[in-house]
Amino acid sequence: MKLIIESCLSEPPSEISCFRDVTLYARTYKFEDVLLECPPGTRSMYWSWLKGFGAHDFISYLIIDTERESGFTLKTDKRADISVDKITCDNLNYIISKLK
Image (cartoon, rainbow, N blue to C red; front, side):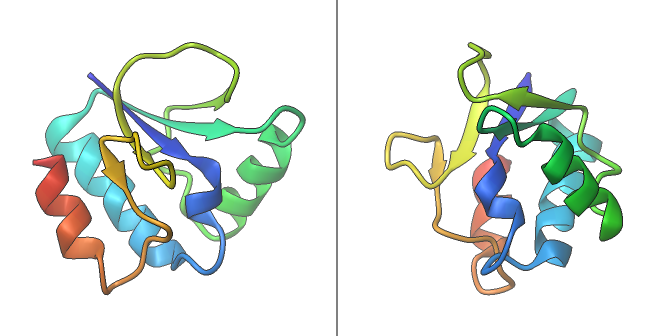
């Protein structure tokens, strides 16, 4: 199964360390792939951003949001499997519990 995370959840006001914790947990215990869904033309920017903060280790692929991938979703959209506006230490336990 794949976890698809909206790319804006990797940038402030989200905490990059908490974003990395979510990807670490997801990849280690639950999902075979963790995908970061980016707007067209931003993949290299997001890859540089994640790599600069050491948060790229558990990301399998960066996909364009127009690509059709199925999986469990973590997004800002209310229709997502987990809907949050940011990833911080305040909602980290909530996100992890929903991933289980």
